[in-house]
Image 1 (cartoon, rainbow, N blue to C red):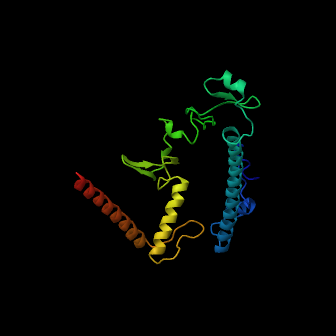
Image 2 (tube, helix red, strand yellow):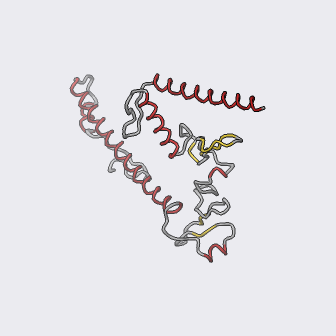
Image 3 (cartoon, rainbow, N blue to C red):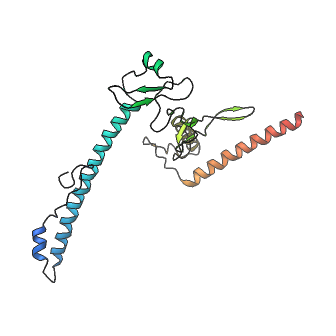
Length: 228
């Protein structure tokens, strides 16, 4: 922290360790191998200290900003939605406690949760925002209806692969674990939730699942033709 200061403070010039020794050797035409290695080791150690100080300064700033964000948008114990405030703010805008910034409630009908930052909807209803680009619906099939499959559609980040909410992601891992146990591989998914099965086993299991779905679809088609 002494070398770089805080992450938000103006940068200051860094004094290189052993600058006096380097100045004494600056006019030398040749350096021994030991002198070169000592100078490099000294500078690498100082650079590592600078990186560590900068990293922890950024972590402290991130922790402070996350605390402010959670207090403002998600975990504030105060009840801003007083009856008077709700009557005076028909658009769902409420004033933060202590004269802070105005906080908007979710615009979804019947929802009184605080809206997320930079949007008018809460996390549960963020897919109702046509302008958002970060979230997509969970693609896990919740029900099979006569009109077609009904998806879970809970919001998940688009960077999540596969596009499944935590509940269906864990369900998929349990199904995969059972399939691998049936294949005689025991329980290859440890407690840290990092699967380590062989690739050819996964491919064969997926092919088996696809073939099973196709057979069921063919049976349903045959029954419909016979009924007609």
